[in-house]
Structures are given as C-alpha cells and as structure tokens.
Length: 432
Image (cartoon, rainbow, N blue to C red; front, side, top):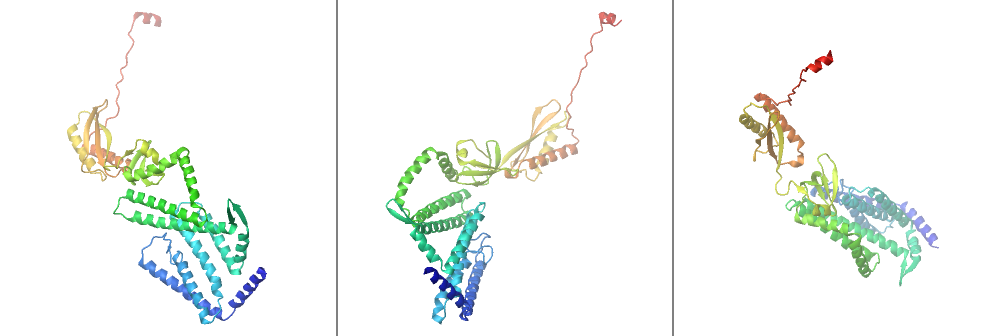
C-alpha cells in the first residue's frame, strides 16, 4: 500500500510539473536564485575575502552562502505558492536539491579550509556527495519515509536501552554535522587570530591552538549528546584514558604539553634560525605535537616538541639575529701587512649583506709556513638567507682587493735537501 501511495504521489508530481502553473513556479525559482546571487555578489564586493573563504568561496556561486540563501528564499516561495492558489510542483524538486547542495558545499569547503594538505579529503567529498544526492532522490520520489520506517524497525538492546538503526544513523549524521560546524568556527577564529599582527606570532599561535582544542572538545560533547550517548559514561572513559596516558601515551602527552610550553615561553618562535641535532634551518611552523624546521636547501625536519625542551638547541635569533662569520686568507711575507688589513676591512664593508655596525675586522691570526694568515670577521643580520652566498661575496671582495694591491697569495712551498752518500775506497773497489 505504501508503494502504491508513493507511485501515485510520483505520478501526481510529474503531472503537476507539466501543468501551466509550473511556469509560474519556475519564474519564482529563477527570481530566488537571482536574488541570492545578487546578495552574495554585493557582500563579496564589500567584504575582502581570501580565496578559501567558506561562505563566499573564490567565486560568487561556489561558497556556502549562495545555496543557503537560495534554500531560504525557496522555502519562503514555497510557503507563498498556496496563497496564490497554485499547487507546489517545481519546489518539491528544488528544496531537496538545494538541501543536498548546502550539505555538500559546507562539508567540502570546511574540510578544505581546515585541512588543506590532507589526501583523503577528495574521497570524503565524493562519499558525502553520493549520500546527499542519494538522499535527495529518495526524498523526491517519496521513498525516504518508507526507508526511515524500515530502519526504525531494526532494533537491538544495549544494556537496558532499545537502540534502532534509524536513531544510530540520525545521531551519527547529527554528530558529524556538529563537528564540521565546530571545525569551521575554530578555523575561522584561527585565521583571524593569525592575521592580527599587533600580537606576537607565538602568542597568536597558542591562542589559536587552544581555541581549536576547546571548540573541538565542546563539539565532541554536543555530538555525543546528539548521538544519544550518555555523557556519564565518559567518567569511566576518562579514567581509562588517564591510565593510558600514564603508560602508553606519555610521550604523546609530553609532546603536546611541550608545544604549549614553547609557545608560551617564546624561547623558540616561528622564523627563528635554530640548530637541533646537527640540523640547521628556519622554524616554519610550531604545531601542538611537533615543530617543522626548514633547512636552506629545502629539506624539512619534523622535530617532536619534547626534544626541543629536553635537548640543547642553538637559536641564532633568540636575543639578536646578528651572526658573526669569518673567512681565512694568507698573504706573502714582506708585504705592508697593516695597510693590507685596513684595505681588506674596507673592501668587506662594501659587501651588501655585511653590517656596517659592528663593522668587519681583520686579525693577524698566525705566522703560517707559507705566508701570513689573516682572519676576516664580519656580521650579518639575515642568517635565514644562508651563509654560503655572503661568504662567497666576501671572498670575492678580498680577492679583488689583493689583486688591486698587488699582494700575492702564496702557494705552498717546500724545500727538499738531497743528501749524497759519502765516497769511500771500499765502494770504489767493489765497483771495479
């Protein structure tokens, strides 16, 4: 009987779609879509958004706001159609389609904005799309109520509570929707905090991490409540989790706590040049569990935060970004060494990345076997740009200065003494 009723409803829907009143509904639908497009376009002109905006998207119609406004306007138009003495036909198809579009856009945009580097997002988007479009088709043809009734009849007993398959599916969908909203809000707050340049970057990062953790925790509690799970059972789970952290998860917990300590103390900041376990580079990001260090050759190292707390870390940018570098050159004995040292200091001072204050210094460091050894010391303020380039420029400036002064860079010289054997009478007799 339900199948006959569904088939009759479908026939009535098809007949109403072919009626002249469907043209009026089509006109109202186009007006709703045009008004939604105009509102989003005006908002996009007024508000400066990034390319990954969840509400507005990178274009006018690819964000979440456009289908939401179109759905609200379509719902209002559907309520107004019976007042005009017309039957609802087109909007019976449009409402499920727009609802599915809102769900797909919301989940896809939020996941892409919150987890841009995850490889499984495309698979999740396709799965959500299939589920949403499948549900809208069942809704349109009138089969969805029958499917929900059949799912409600599938029950089993969990303790003293009767649980149906329908309740589990509805609770799971509600929980997923709440978690997506919590992830969206936390990502939006995190982006706004990181764009606020008036506060130190480390403090902004720790505020963003705490905000995301708090919102995700609240979202998880709401999702569990929506799924019908008793939160009083979480007391036992919390005790078990505490035991697990005490034994098996202590390293993971230590890394998370160390991450917040690093951000709070600001002993290591994003952009600092550091050296950890013979790996030198610039800190590109500080996560709650690990820190990413990018070397000047493009390699990246993922360092657990506990390592940065418990081991020795060389930070070239903590108190002062200035770094002292040096290079060594030999000049021949007999040259005017004091004049040469003064000329070398002036030549190195002209190199672009070398600081004027404190300026370069030249020291007579050794009387070597082949010449006088000079150590040229100079300061730079941008170690994140590398040391090889500025050292090469300094060496070239030294070479040009010595060539202009006519000072020779001595080659290694060695004196070989050949000792001849003494001429004796026994050696002469043996030769005869």
